[in-house]
Image 1 (tube, one colour):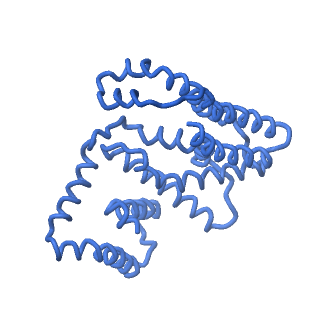
Image 2 (cartoon, one colour):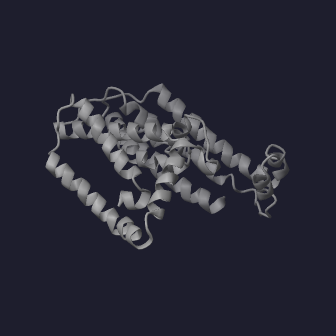
Image 3 (cartoon, rainbow, N blue to C red):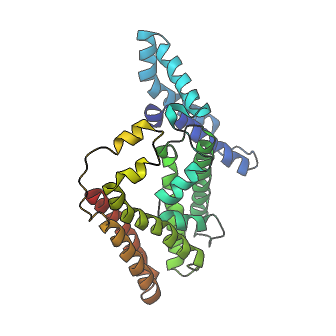
Amino acid sequence: MGILTKGPAAYLILGLTLAVYWVYQRLRFYINIPQFTLYTLAAFLVTGLWFGIETIKNGPWFITEFTRYQYRLFSTPDAGHGGFPGYHFVVLLVGCFPASIFAIRAFFKLPDPEGEVQLDFRRWMKFLFWVVLILFTIVKSKIVHYSSLAYYPLTYLAALSIVAIIEEKIAFNRWMKVGLWGIGGLYIACCFALPWLGQHPEVVQSMIDKDPFAYANFDAKVHWTGWEFIPGLFLLLTLLMFFWLLRRRGANQAFPVLFLSTGYLCCCALFFI
């Protein structure tokens, strides 16, 4: 399914993650080679149902162009999607707020879980996270959803940290508080700034006059009510409530409020903005 959706990048990510774990195991084989070969054949058989029939019917043109396109995405900032090397670090840190703040803690020493299976799964999640992040940092085309597979290990690792905080095995550190207010404050500021900028598009246009397409977009007739700051106000109240609960009632009550509220914030922002 991954290959049908995104092409050979899906198998590449799988293979790289397996290779990293292989190095971690000091180059000892930890999987059954015949089973892995069968798995590989099955994966390519599924894709062959599409690529194979296409090639038989129309020749290799599609496969050739598809491969060239994938290489172009990897080696050049294709279709104007360039970006700085730390692009996906910022995407995950800001875009996966607030989970990203707590995921950082999981890359350092955490209390060992009960059982080797959970400890091993934590390793797999770390390896998968770094494979995705490093791979798409190398890729020249910078598009937001390229690092989306990292959402899964990131939120899993965040959950480990949160459980450890709730069980009082690790402390809620000052840098976590700074991170929540720092990124949360960015969202709050944007929500308060958007209505004003929307009603004064010339301010933005003066900064993007060299991009005709972006400049013309700000000529669109959009009705701003001035109430679009409400999601930002809601997030501000959420963070205040979270820290009050954390101090007075404990992490067990504070974290559900934080994560349910930030989920609701997305719906609220879609409605108003």
